[in-house]
Length: 629
Ligand code: SF4
Picture 1: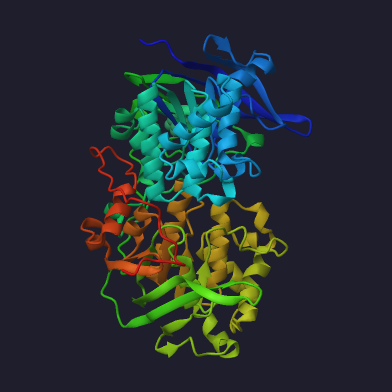
Picture 2: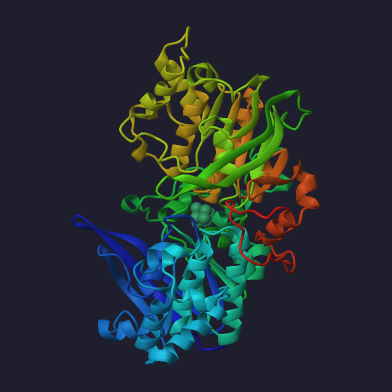
């Protein structure tokens, strides 16, 4: 057995809140050897980032290490004086974060930021540091690296910034890299490049890597071992193969069951009822007990201990001690959907739609060109059907959605809702049609007015669009809507900040439903949500479609969601639809090279052999200057 590079024993971390100290991470232990990747997997708020920050002693001001040991390179990092700790950070152990924009210094050139680390940890300066910085930028695959050394972060795209941050992290030759959601903010094709890069650099330098993620696809590609965190504890630890072939903790099993994919079409996704317990109300027994289908008295009374279930595979669950208790969890009622039925005539017809934004320059603001955000887009969508519009950031999919709703004036083309042309209508004429088409956004918090109660938010749309409830009062209508989206009618009196992300998205859906629309444009409605909450929202959207015959234009970059929910898919690239067809056709045999590259870059949450990624060379052209063909 190799000596671990990093050994964490019984690490506990708390946060001061007023006079109390709330424990966010409890007795976390794991080892990591050189050249190995350990993935810490978990949903938001489970304590994985807090664990990572504690290793480097970078907790925010309210954070306190309550106990434990972090052994790295012969030292207990928790006992090191701060001055020695500085040598560890960026030297022995480096960290990369999810959001490079906030981690890079905006007023320093890329080259200078790398050189600073080289000076501090390797005593390199002047030309030698410059040369090494250039080598590092080349190593992370930065195109035109020599020129980029003099660039500032704002001049770089998201993928380039992430590469710079990796170059900065690697500059001190770290033996251990802590990567906290390093690709979550990136498009799949860039994600594939960055993951590839990390794997290659790790193999070349024998670096250990602690990878923090919530993405089972990334885990399948990168990890040697996996630790699953829930409510501040590690509850399952396993080698990658055992983790994917036989997850043993009920929570891990539920996470897998909540993933949308093509095999679950027509049925409901499994969800995890309830919420992660709050730090102020952490149960003394199993922390998953309130949501676990197998829980019994012992689970509520006694915290489960570790049980070894295989080589390096251990689980914290009482079921392992009393397997006879294992009840087959009742599969959630599969409900036959009628939404796969043959579509009737088109509700929405988009024909040669264009949205071009002028580029103006000079004193007279003369138009010198156009950004072709949406360029000649055509499709039809029938009642009760879902068309997924997929593509990477900046491909024009959200602009297309807004242009369809006439929130942005199209430059050319036609948009017809049930045969009525929308592009020629005045604002006044559009008003009665607005209630027939609604939009749900990615960030439900930003789209809900924080000063209005939930009841007022839902009622506001009704009044604005003149939807009155003749037979029932407004309150009864709001209560019914809240029930329809799975919320307690009492929620009407409360305010958006009192709800979780998934609940806020339900409120946004209730608001959209309040005006009885026929078409809903869903703009990445689940991309900010955890997998278990995403499953609830997808189930809800599906059952509403079945019950009310709604048509969805579903804007997304998540192919698993497309496979599960959509009937047809249109792939957008640089403002144009490059491929369109039935979901099974496009997903199983994509024709366009871009679709093939996009699909090949999506990390699959299973071990289905080596994934062959099709690489597109060069950067994506600007929509201001797209290629002719
Ligand atoms: Fe479920 Fe009990 Fe196991 Fe916790 S200990 S996961 S409640 S069976």
